[in-house]
Structures are given as structure tokens and as C-alpha cells.
Length: 409
Ligand code: TRP
Image 1: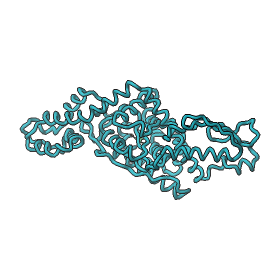
Image 2: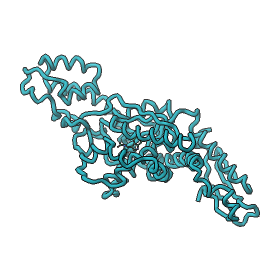
Image 3: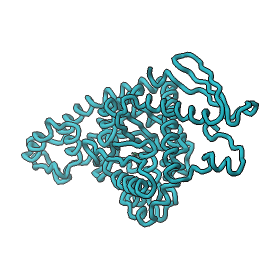
């Protein structure tokens, strides 16, 4: 039975006309059969928990270890994303239970003034993941804003992080410069805390990322250690996994390829665009004539040779140093190699672009599955922090209160 075969379609806790206190009706779909159960009293909550747990176990079938990673939907993804993280998520999707977050709330840290762009960019990021070879049958892609548990967890974590440690985060500092901000919002300063919630709400073990994300991962690991020590050990400490090229230089020679730097080759760029971008990319500026030996170490294009053309890179480097190959020939050779990687990516993108309803459906079921995972972790977290007293029967009984069951309302 696959996780899609059993779906809890409706839970109606506390049916008022029911003679039992706290009784309710379960309706669920089991291998295409609709099953309806009436239960009373404490059995209701127990059964509810049991079913939720059962579904989560089925979802993480062979109790595989879990991967969580993702991107901000601020535009299309580029070859830097591919080498930094996408390649690893695709390679590991069989071995790990893979969750991909489309971090739309995090995108608001810099795009708060244009939230209307998010919808289109969520689709772009989903398409780029599928285009890179992510299998929607194997991996779960979801949208951050659809998982309110992440926001809740962010607030709890924010008590465990000092403002100074956030102000010293090197990635936040670089981004501040990049966007020309003198001051930043509370949300921007705190997004690494929210990212710690992203990677821990599902108890992920492995986080495939580029090296700019390492400070955020380090913070997440600190928070987990602190939480587990202070309360109860219910969280998993995530490990980073760097890509084959943890940081790719931009076409202009900038240390990083980035959308806001306008120096990218996008996964969705057409063949002609890639050619034109590559052929105008920065090389060794001292090499004004083909007869002057080049220095591959200061050449942007050579960094791409290393990234995309490992087999020939060494040889091309030697020829460049000996003035035995010119920049045009070197670029031509790289272009062929990159095309062999980018062509299947373009083809898969075109397939899904023509069928966006499949992509929305995939995101919808991804959100549903992720919420079930999040709900389970949050129960353990609230319990560990002893902030589950309101749902605890003791309080309800003490005060002779009738409180609606919190699940499903
Ligand atoms: N900060 C990441 C980026 O800028 C996006 C992201 C959000 C992320 N949540 C994450 C990456 C969790 C890895 C894990 O691309």
C-alpha cells in the first residue's frame, strides 16, 4: 500500500450531538474504500494520534533518512544552484526521503514590496527542480507559507538565539551589502532562525546546499543542541552536504553567480542565449592576443571548465598556459559540454511547462504530506517544552472546561 492509497479525508472531532464527551467521527479512505468510524471519549484522541503516526510511518516507508533543502522563489534557478544543490538532491532522491522547500516566506525578506511575484516564481522554482530531474513520485516538494508549523517553530527558536549572533552572520552581511541595505528588517535579520525551523520541523538529517548556506546550517545545529539539552532530545541535528562546486563564479568574474548580480546562466536559458553569454564571459584580461599565454586561475570560463568538463579541464588549462588554445576554442568546447547537460533539463522543463496543472497538484499533495509530518514533530516539541498544557486533559478537567479538540480545527 502506498502513502497515496490511505488518506485521512475528514476528521470531525467532538460532534456536539454525540452522547459521549469528546466523541467524533472518522472518515477515511483505505484502498479506495470509504471507512467511517464513530468513537467516544479519550479513544478519539488516541485513535487520531495513532492514525497520524501510521500515516507518517507509511510516508517515510523504509524509515529512510531525510533530506531537506530548497530555494527562495525570487526568480529562475541557475547553473550555480544546479552544481551547489540540485545535482545532489536529484542523485540522492532514491536513497533519502527527500523534501524540497520553496521558501516563499523567506523570499519576502527582500521581496516584501512585490509579493504578487511570488506565485509565478514558486512555479518557476518547481519547474526548475523537475527539469533538473527531481522525480515527483519520489520527492516531496512543498511551499513554506502553507506550513504554519514552521512559523510557530521559528518563534520558539527565536528565544534561543541572540541578536548579536544574527548580526554577525556572514551570509546576512554579504546580502545586506549586495542589496545596498543600511538597516534591515527584523524578518531579514531573523531569516536564519526561520531556516533552522525549515530544516528541523521535519527532522532532516542531510541538507544539500552551496557554501553560502553553511552559517545558517551552523546556527540550526546550535539551536538543535540547545533545544535538546534544555528541554528534551526530540530534534535531529542536520548535516550539510556541499555540492560538486559549492560556489560558482558569475559570468562577470564576481565571486558568486546570483540573480540580483545579473551574471547568471539560467537552467531555462535557450541554447543561443547560453552561447551568447558564454562567449561574452570574462577571461584572463591580460591575454589580449592568442599568442600570449593565459592564466586559467584568473579566468571565469576556466572555472566553468572545471565544473562542467572535468575530463578535459586539466588538458585545456595546460594548453591555455602554453598559448596552444585560444579563448574562442576553449569556450566552444565548454559550450558543447554544457549543452549536453542543459538539453535534457530544457526538455523536461518544456514538458512540465505545458502541464502546469500537474505541477500545482504535486505541490498541493506535497503541502498536505508535509503538514502531517510537521504536526507530528510539533506535538513532540510542545510536549518537550511543556507548552502542551492547554491540550492536556488535566487543565480541561481542572477547570471543567469543554475545549474542542485542536486537531483539524
Ligand atoms: N536560503 C536558501 C537560499 O537562499 C533557501 C532556503 C530556505 C533553504 N530554507 C532552506 C535552503 C532550508 C536549504 C534548507 O537559497
